Length: 198
Image (tube, one colour):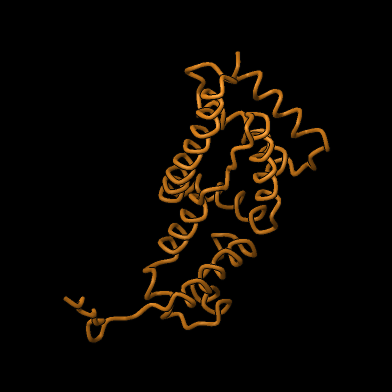
């Protein structure tokens, strides 16, 4: 039996993926350029090369638009190859994290959104949910592998692991905006393993 072809209901808007992607990119660029407070749907539409109606068809407000796009970015999975050792896994993860935090757009957007989150509970909740889930998954993967290999004791805390791994890099690159010395990542890896092994 042949499957019936589905028709789009008459009058229903068909949202083109290329336009949605252009708008999403424009939101990120606009956030980096002016911050959440000064971001406007008009400016996003202009940057994306679309009419305002194209934005409003996808999101009903600036807040809804930013929340969906930021949650999507914050919740993205990072590639975490199994190098065969906890030291190797941590080194690769820290290198990926360092590249991400040094990205010009990220270095502008992250501090601004965190400041906005202090004033806006919806932004705070969205960021916390996306980041917490992502970080727990990363910690569970890294620590789980290390326990299976016998590198960490049973009961090693994956959430503590992420705090120890991400905190110092975020502090150096995003808060202090200090360059990382060449030996920083290896020293941090050694310190994290020692703390988790204690």
